Image 1 (tube, rainbow, N blue to C red):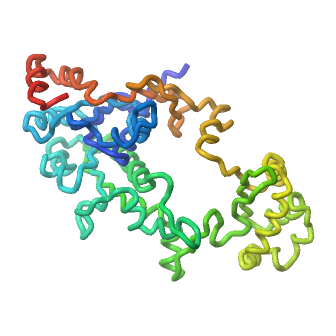
Image 2 (image 1 turned 90 degrees about the vertical axis):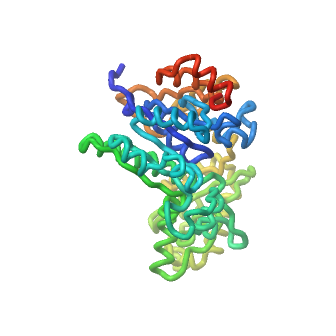
Image 3 (image 1 turned 60 degrees about the vertical axis):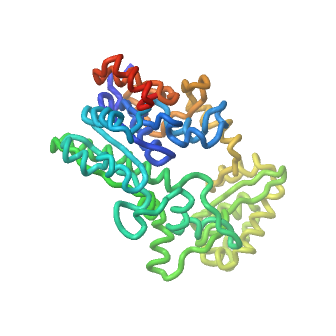
Length: 398
C-alpha cells in the first residue's frame, strides 16, 4: 500500500459557482484530495440542482460536477452572509467563481480584489467572454458560445449544423480553470504568491477550434461539415453492418488502405488502383471509396467486422449508445465504477481520468444536499451556535 498522499491533500478551495464550468473545475480539485467548500444561495442553491431529476430524483449535471464537496448555504446579498464568505476565503488556498459579469466585483469577490487582500490566494474568475471587450456583458450559455466560436458551423451534416451533444464550452473552460489552479499553486510553491487567474468559455472553446481555425485562417476556407466523415481523410466514416450495427473506421495512410483492401474488403486490386491508391484519390472519389467499404462491411456482422479490422491493424470503433457506454467492457475490465453517496443514496460514478498508480484512489466523496455542511463549516470558523441559529432564522443561511 502506497503512503503517498493525494496531490492536493491539505489544500482548501472555496467556490461561489453554478451550472457546469466552475463546478466541473472544482470537482477535479476535490478528486485530487482538496477540500472544496461550495457556497450556494439558501433559496435553491446552484441552479443546476433543478435541471432535471434523472439521477434518482437528483439533477444529472449536479451529480456529475459536485461530488466530494461541502455545501454551505449563504445569502451573499446580506452583509452578514458576505462577511462569512470572506472569512472562508481568508482561510482558503484557492477561490473559484463564475457569477454573472460584474457580480463578483460588486461583492468584492473578484480575483483581483481577493488576491490584493490575500497574496497567497489563487483566485479564479470564470466568465463567458472575459472581463472586457464588446461581448463581456453578454450571457454565455454553452450553446451560445458553441455558436459564437464556430463549433456549430463545423459540426453536423452538410445539410444541417448541430451543437455538440455535451457542453463543450463549459467543459473546456472547466479544464483550463483546473489547469490554471494547478499551475498557480506550483508558482506559489516557488514564489510564495498565488495570484489571479482568468478563464473564459469563449477563449477556451476558441482554442479547441484550433484545427478548423488554422485551416480556415491560413487556407482560406473552413473544413466543411461532414457528419461522421472527415473532410480530408477517406475512408473515415461509420458503415452499417449485416446485423444492424454501425462500425466506424479510419484509414490514415496508404499502407493501411492496402491492408484494408487485401484483408477486409478482399479486393486486393484496389490497393494499386489509381482511383484508390492515395488518400487524395480516395477523398476525390469519396463516393466510390465509401461504396467499396460499405459493400464489404454490409455483408459482415459487427463483431466479425471489428475482428477483421483489428486483425488488419485498421483503427475502428463501434458507434455505441450511452447505454452501451455504461456497459462497456473496457470500463468493467478496468474496474472504473465506484458508488458515490448522495441524498438519494449511492450512485455509480466513474473514477477520474487522472490516475496516480503510486498513490491512493480518488476519494469519490459525497454529492451534498443544499446547505448540509453549513453548521459544521461555520463552527469551524468559530461562529457561536447561538449566532448560527439567529442567522438561520433571518434567512441568511440554510
